Length: 560
Image 1 (cartoon, rainbow, N blue to C red):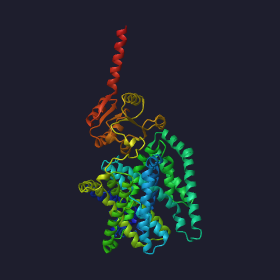
Image 2: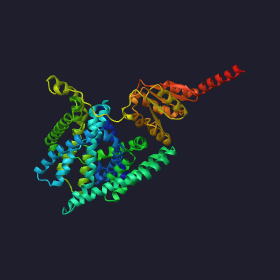
Image 3: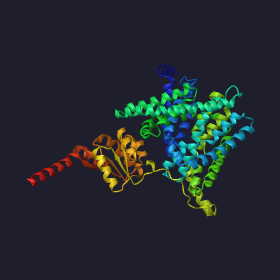
């Protein structure tokens, strides 16, 4: 005990808990990865283990969950910011049928069913509305990650799931706006208050858009010219925090402010660079957010009501699966993609948890109901990867019994606009200096599709004007290479002579695509040997310059 007391005296309890959270999340997530389960489930389990082990109390943190909630709030802000960056108006236009028809029907049907059940148990209509939305939202983080892990990002099911998810995102943002009015102390002017909140939110988003065009984007352009990665990352976090603070100051949520900050740069050349720079921070605070949710789960409730939890999880999965599958078939999606889309959207989502937390701040929800929702969400997320894998044999089973055969036609799926993430058999050119420009022209002359990764904002802007696929990003970042679809590329060329950067990127490239042809530059023999051992075809600058000079010298003497 003296040792514990000394430790508690010298070490901040919050730091102790945070250290434990991160270390335990690593070990539990390793087990989840081995079992091929979502890492988010591992984060939930980490929180459950910590909260039910008595460790926070041992650390002297009677209010541990409240303190870690501050990190969760920051996690929500970063999560909403990246959602804003990833939210594409162009994508929404291309997927409008899936978004507005599919997403609209899915949300309406699920909300009506869940809200009706809540009303049957005597809940006020405001809580019925929130409960309906909570159960209607799906875990896009888990489903879209599962599509990527299974190599199905271009599957029609992924497009349908993305369209429905976009509509869910729009609806939950609108609900965040009216939530304070919805749970206000008086309902005499409820409609006027909700309209005012929506109007204030729209004005805020429009103002953020103007600020982004005439303030934030020029600022980021100036920062990008410094070529300082640290300054660019700091600017992004500062801008996100600033706009989020402005949203809070206007009595809107910090989450809405962060979403607006991401939205204003989503269509700029900086979006890809922002995602690659902010992703590690997002992952860190998203981890803390899900662990903090796990900290709120009471194992006594799980043990006492295990049958309710299992039944609730099964009902949620089956109902949402049936609704999404029926809507997908209504939109003339073939059997297998329809099953896959239904399986991917059958759980409750991470934004349901955010909504529960925001609602609790305004009007506390029954703790028993909150516990059921938290645990069903964790179990539902765990089911998604396995259920998506199981759809293929299930489709075979259905087809053998003659079901859906009459409808097995290949409909015309709405095609996405030609975009970087759907490129394949292409060449990736890292760096657009003189060498990169010559290589680009030569490959285009042969009809080979090319994608350029460059850190020069002016270059990226000019290439975008010319409609050339370009990523404004750092080729040493794994996220930038993933966005360039390196796993489906035929060739990658590092046209800059910075061998240190090439050596960072090369293992990532070859791990994702062992068959890809890799070309790199080196100034010195030792660097060339190192790159060749790593698997690259090396263009040795000294040797090539020597050959060029020799040819020119001999030509000059021949003329003489």
